[in-house]
Length: 202
Image (cartoon, rainbow, N blue to C red; front, side):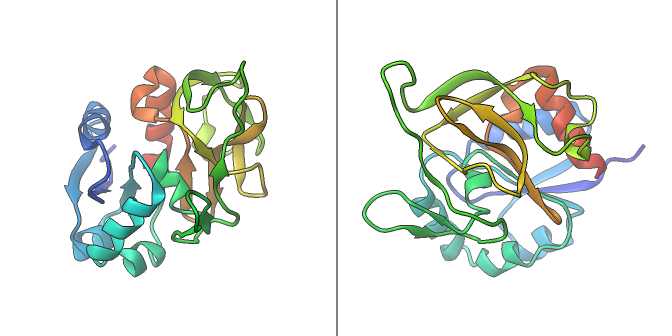
């Protein structure tokens, strides 16, 4: 089976090496690009990201990609910060950051406690919310994936799977052709590889 051509968006705020390595292990035809024409013509688009929403959105604006990303009609996957950028606003700092707004709801900081320090870092379990979703095909309930984040999307109608860390939050999201993983599938072993493979096959 021929894998689709994948554009990995170079927003300037992502560790692209591990994402590309994971795609290469799946024999995906992937390229890193910030060229709007290449992104629009790709069969799949992945938006990785690390860090904070404000500098990430600033980079996306500077590269002229805001409306390009909002208008994509092929399957799109946001990873970690890349998922958060798909939502409406991110409440970090004194003023909320306007994000891409293709998934409903906003991003807020996680609640820290002595037992649950923030950032949430390490392996945690997935609980499917939308049963038998194509992105979770052959991913057993309770599977462990790798998280590194301080902000999260609350559970909503867009939640495909959730994770509990003192409170339940969205671990996998999706509406229409836009999907997101709050964790790092490229660092999540065979489970993460399966989720990436499922995305490529959508």
